[in-house]
Length: 490
Image 1 (cartoon, one colour):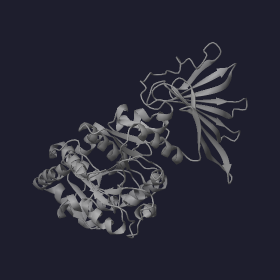
Image 2: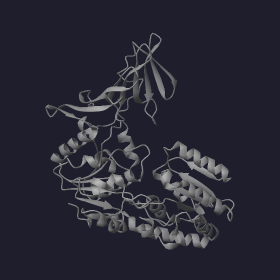
Image 3: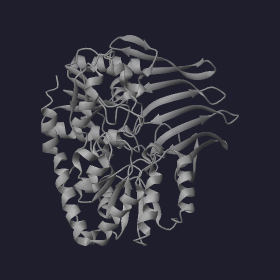
Image 4: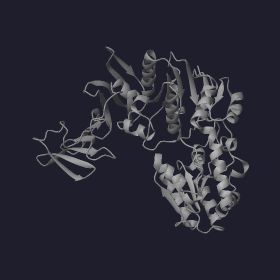
């Protein structure tokens, strides 16, 4: 058994989760049993994994494990049909499609928030006292059972959270206490687990216990995908091997080792080895650690084809991925401005999500200053067929990321036959792309000239599309699986 471990499956997943999920699917497709393992509590987890192409048999969540809910069939819980709301005593009013109020003699005693992206299904239920203060909140699992209840102090902060099995048995409690003026989780208590109670100080300690329990039943190899969870691994016993997959560069832009990796690199965390995406990074990292450093791709493409220029929106540049300051999205705007000097109708679309409101405001201001307001758009985060359509509708993918682990967005675009222009950075692009596709970091004019050439020469564009498709062959399922098997992981 293989366990690929991370924090969560999110509404907006990053390349790390997509890589982890694709590898999980790949391993299972070859009969190599593998689980996508997550730590965090998420009531919609079993809906979210579908966006990653996974099913319930390919995943294992820590809270599901202790809630005896790893294999639960979905039963939709409509709020007006739920037996948890006595209809003879309470009146239900729905001021909008996203919530309903539970009234008793005209007073709002509870509010039901509909589960996002559903119609009238139970999401969570907030309960109020006579002063309209929230006193408790029930969270409903996507599969249709009450999963947890949080209880609140008068100031609105959580004091205690209880977790239930699908039949309503309390199996876990999290106590929140005041620590230096802040309420925070201070005890995780398993209740009557295998006939005993267990207490843990942190969620990571609970996770270590969970993995040891799972490994007693199904020993196997661990691959951790997130540096934030490095400290959960030393306490995990009975594994065939414990590896950390680094999806990014091991250094910052100044060439300094990331502080999150210092203990790992000096061998203090009981890992068997480190895995990176490219042999180039493997060679650079190996002298820095006594641990074996291995290399295997973190990207797997579903299909590989050559696109037709007729399918593309003329002169459209696509920037794909999370919009964050470290990815230098402003560079794409300067490059577009330079492109428009030769191709006046060139446009740019950002496709991804951002949690940085200040950055988005700064980009809006720069768009205004450069006179690009009518030629730059920010599209919604999409996956699956919708993402395929976005890629195949563009004429060029532009990557201005100054540091890479592999460059998943480039490879995904290339598998659709979309030409890519990217900064020549370590690691990734310069290991699978040719010189004519790469430009020096910050050289806006050279990047623009490459794009203009593709826009103005249909024959050159078609040749670039064919080349991109050929380069993506390195990342097909069969090719990637062989490279992983060649690692001979313990």
